[in-house]
Length: 212
Image 1 (tube, one colour):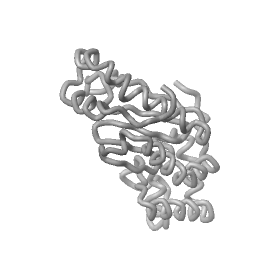
Image 2 (cartoon, one colour):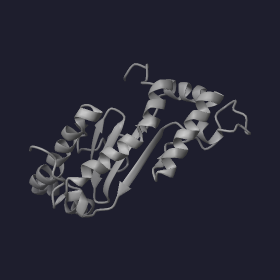
Image 3 (cartoon, rainbow, N blue to C red):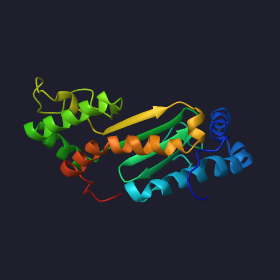
């Protein structure tokens, strides 16, 4: 496929059907639709975004069910990643996001030290406020209580509770999903999220723990 023209007409219907029948039989029967209307366009989208955001890859469609009570074999969306930037398409439409979805323990330690620092923590607050004013939601896994040793009156207590931090924007299924305009939706969101990803890169960085 050359260039990105939008996701195929059958993309949403493919995932609607998978939600009803998440089985190998359905997947095998509809594999051509997945390749033509979902995976092919996702690769073309990542290729089109590569000059600005770097090389991307598509996540495998298979779920890791080894430690899950849910044994359905297939993911109900197709996700792609380019560094800290993420995009997915599914029955709910399109989502673009960026940040650190889940931080390792050494990353959490560096993150909390930076948030605790007045200058760096206040800088992050301002960047998040600007994102939210632009209509981007900010989320991430958090502790139910405050981190050990943190003052309950800390001015950035809510940020200190985070174990992951990312911003995201989504669009329900519409005509643009099947048109080249999807590329600008994703690129525009990723550009808007650069202040967050740059803060995380500067003050947290990748995990230094050995991979298991």
